Image 1 (cartoon, one colour):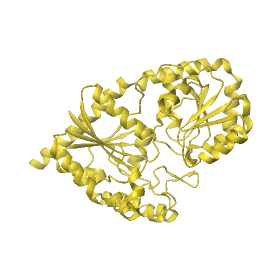
Image 2 (image 1 turned 90 degrees about the vertical axis):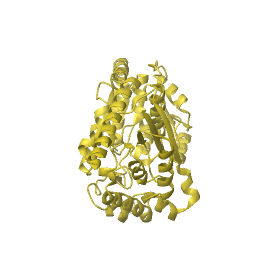
Image 3 (image 1 turned 30 degrees about the vertical axis):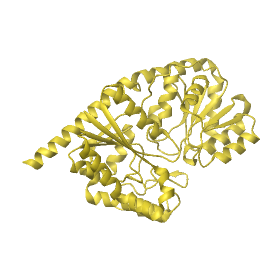
Image 4 (image 1 turned 135 degrees about the vertical axis):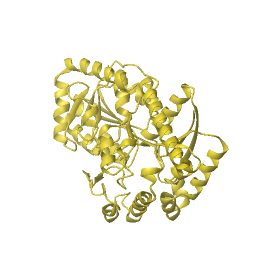
Length: 397
């Protein structure tokens, strides 16, 4: 099998970039021939808004580039991680024209929500779910606070529904959770073509000791990640459980100010993944306070691999992945008082923390290893190839 993996890298490196690299490495180590085609989204700042808006709907450059690449070498399958905004769904059409099967991983909800996160004004919003045109998002400027930008994304969504890109050009979608799969079915994607495969961690870092007396947050410093709620909670928790924060993003200045005024908070900035994994091995718990649905936070797999329990918001798929009282504790999303209550319950029962760590590690070994993921991914590829071959046979007859 020859696979071309396609990805638009984010301006601030995140979980999707990590998953892209991990899956490419996983396949290569299994003896599958894998090449990659990447776009760097930092080009957005160089080429201007008008060209980016046009590329979002249909990138002539990327359509031609992908088609030329697929002609130059006989690939069996193209696996897309992120096409937004520079690659565009035009690349699906290029693959179909060359008879190459297409798999699309659904890392976020961009196909259904211009903002990609089903959230507006700090609350869950599904106003555009199932609409032919996402006009509420345009009205509210949901994509980066811009009506023009939101209109470009809404045009991409609606245009490709009309072109049949979502229904007929992709042979298999990968949803990261059953929760996500059901949302995409609600939005109109064909249920039979959506498989569920979670993220994974490789190499296995091994269970940590949890000997450090601190809680950890690592990730993007965005409002929808619940960063402000975490900072507010530590006004009460304080030195009883020091907090270390790793990451970068729009709220970096706020986090720095909070750390300067609260000695219980240490802000370490963006750290290499090796340092994040090392900190997970020493932390007592990880704080995951998202106020949006998430796709499948890769950080959960990493915590489980290290045997690190989570204090997490009970929203979307997180409520299913983090098992209350077994691999961590759940609190009401956006509810600072409930987050504080769960942290205090965690601190009040130190004898339970070893059991939580063992259960977290067991969850990793059961569901989130590289070996388990490889089997699932190969099955999805086989189904996509069968779908494409059946379609080709039907056309030929």
